[in-house]
Amino acid sequence: MMTNDVNNKMTRRLFLRSSAATMGVLASPALAQSTGEAQIEEEISSETRRNISSFRSLKWQPYFANLSGGAILVDTTSRALHYWSADETMYKLYPTSVPMSADLTRLGRTKIVRKVDGPSWRPTPSMLKRNPEWPAYIAPGPENPMGTHALHLSWTYYRIHGTHDTRKIGRRSSNGCIGLYNKHIQELFALATVGTQVLLI
Image 1 (cartoon, rainbow, N blue to C red):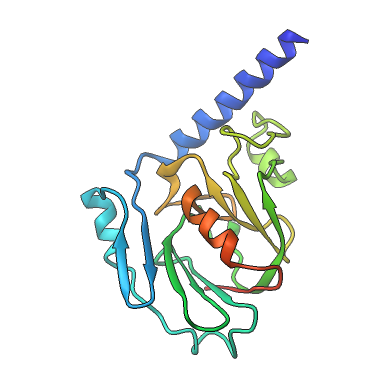
Image 2 (cartoon, helix red, strand yellow; image 1 turned 60 degrees about the vertical axis):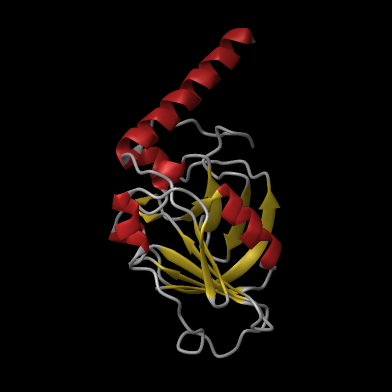
């Protein structure tokens, strides 16, 4: 029993190490924008500052017919997530990680169908095929690549979730999901509801 626990921990460590090595290193920015005011919450490296400088506030009208249930726009080019509350009193802008390649990227309209506080993680069959050394399951906790919270989309396997590996944010580093800093997914998790409309462009 103890040997299995040790092996599981080693496999998880290998998974996390190999993921981080693949993604590269990035200092952690954190930008959250409320209506009319941008707030830089952490020290930002010059490399990351260049990426954040491309962020801009957007109006919801070109993307959604209404704000019923609130709306989330994910711009995979600028690597930013925009959130508008249903009553238009709140607007948030967060840096994200986005899929590594075009074939892993899904664009279009979807919605939040489930919210999970403390998600577990299982790689998809295609992820295991590409990375057979990855564990088949990781329980909730600091080694979980889904971070502290997850918003499941109506598309199978696709989520907006947190990450404990802050180096991924601002990069093309995911296998299809949209990643946020844990403190940002916690905030978005509290704001968004099941049914919130989501558009990835």
